[in-house]
Length: 165
Image 1 (cartoon, rainbow, N blue to C red):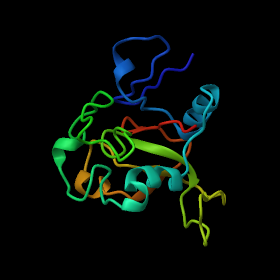
Image 2: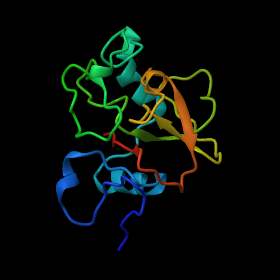
Image 3: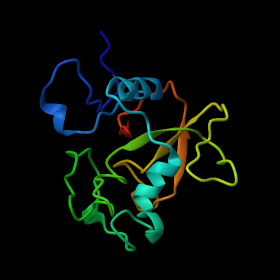
Image 4: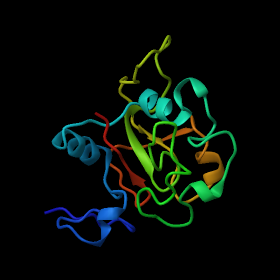
C-alpha cells in the first residue's frame, strides 16, 4: 500500500477529508495510471492551453484579460472550485491556474511545428507542468501559456493533475 510521504499530499487509500481537494503528491506515472483507470488520460499541453486561453479568444488568464488574485487559489491548497464561477474558464473549467501545478502528457520541450492538436512525445528527462500552484510566483504562473517541467518520477505537494476525456 502506497501513501505519499510528501508534505501537503492529499492522496490517501481511504476516502476522507481530502476528497474536496486536488490530488497532489503523485508523480507523473501515478497520474497517468490513475487517468487510464478512470477511463481518461492526461491532457496534452495543446488541450490544456485551448481550455485556458478560451480557444479563439486567446485570454491571458482563463477568466479574462486582467490578473485578479480573487479568482485563484494562492498561499494554500484550496478546495476544488473554490473560486467558481468567477475564476472559471470560458467553458467552465475550474482551477486551470493556481491551486496545484498539473501534469500534462507532453515531454518538456518545443512542440512540433506546424502544430494542430499535437503533443511533444519526443522523450526527454522532464514532463510538462501547467497552471502554477498556490506557491508563487503566482502572478507569472497564473498567466496561460507558461510551462515548466519536472522529472516524471518526482512528487510534490504542489503538483497534481486532471484527466481528459
